[in-house]
Image (cartoon, rainbow, N blue to C red; front, side, top):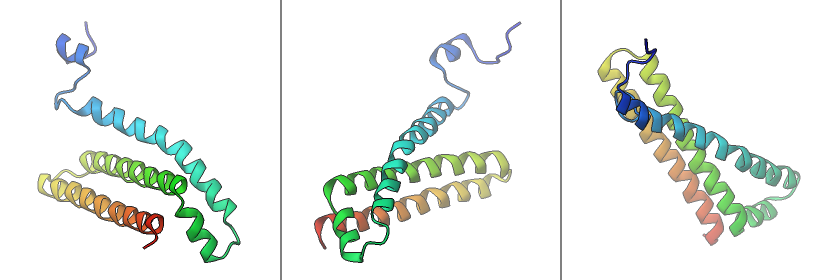
Amino acid sequence: MSDSFRTPLGRVRGLGSAKKGAHHWWMQRVTAVALIPLVVLFTAYLVMLTGQDWDVVYYVLGRPTAALITTLLVVALFWHLSLGLQVVIEDYVHDEWIKLIGILAVKFACIFVGGACIFAILSMAIGG
């Protein structure tokens, strides 16, 4: 007797009943793995800049390499945050309309704050 309720075709494709569970799970893992080197590199920048005055920090973080690393960190971080909070809301909120409002609020907050972070990074990189 099989320990899965999925159809053989569903098992081959790796899809759950909603057809998106496996993709969501994989994206959470991919963003988690991407965050490891990005956090290490960003932390190295912060340690290197400890004790420096604001002009040096602004100059170094505005350089293309640092701006790229920081932008990738922000994108991966807020994407991972959004995916993780969505799972928490789906698992622990039982009223459907509150669940929908919660997921939408998380998505909009992540887009807004992530966009603000990227705007700040680009303004340093462009020199505005």
